[in-house]
Image 1 (tube, rainbow over the protein chains, first blue to last red):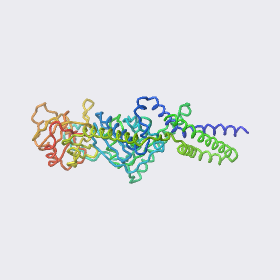
Image 2: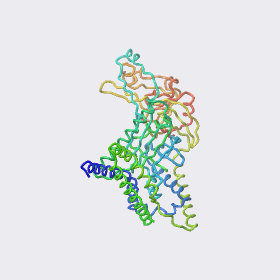
Image 3: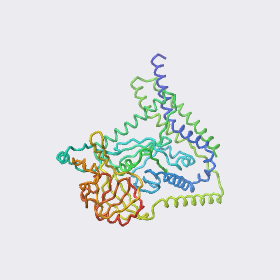
Image 4: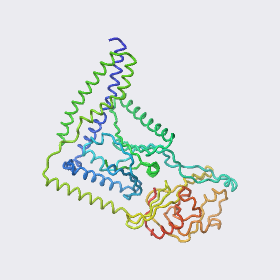
Length: 254
Length: 245
């Protein structure tokens, strides 16, 4: 073997190790969640193994969802609930549903299908805090105006009312357990919409790759972020994003 | 239950790892034997395909759920009844949170209101909410004209309300600010026939500018047209809930 081949072999091995660490991250995550559950003796006692039966599975999911909704209702601020079984997204205050919209398109990672019921029950029977919100939507479309000096200046600067800023709507909510909920507007009408979508996803992938590479270089375990992609009408998405406070909670039913 | 789960994982993981080792060896054999550009091409393809392939194998092979234990029908029936009972109980608690009488929901993003009586929608129509204008008067004073979000209660109701203009109403028109109880501060008829007080200076009232309904034009109050204002005023009582989002 010459020098080049050795170098190539080393580079290839590092690359393979990196790719494998990324690819195996979902399993690590599921195992980590399982360990968390096993350490929670109270939950283990509560969870009934008959729930694994197909007839009871849906009922147990419903129970977890309702439990989470009830806990969500204890909060004073606006919160979000995502029911993937009946394809709906809801906003609520103190348990009162104030806005509801139908999910047009739904995609979720295989991770959620492979998640054992006890894990699903344990995670989703509580509201998940949303740790990070990123969006193309302006949360508060503030318009700054300076006080006119006199009535003539006020008349000259007369403001024409218009709807709030309506830019293309894409948003990512990262919750506890690093679950990412990606909201997309259901239709892209023009070039600007597609450009915004491309830019939005490009940034998202770039940050994911950067995070993975840094974790690998620092010998840290890879963080797997399971994704749920939801398409809803743009106006509903803007409404939801603008309505949510800085640190909202989310309830999910898979 | 968890013992069988762990064993199952281990069994499948061995297969998954064996397959991965085989694929890696294969890749190394192939790439070292061919020309540079093909190596680069192979590496590129690998970068894209390897994680996908590995994920595919993982999801195919790994089964994390334990094998279902056989239970007697009676046990399952009891579990089902218990689950149904718990769900029903939670449903009742959730429904109890919804006001039984009239309540108002305001969407400040689309400038729409919905009047409900319990679970029944009574009326949905346009309204106007805060404009999100930040009015700056030099460095000293500023006002943000936005409608607050959250749960509110009707604190008071007024018929034929009179608007006592605050300082910003003069400043935004370029007028000098008069004394606190100066006659020029009082305007009659501009708030419509009724005003419902939400507290903190925010009202639900009527408007002279009905063409702006459906647009964010207010200083934080909620404007309705005359017909809707009458309906809302008659429906909502002191203490009735108003949800703004």
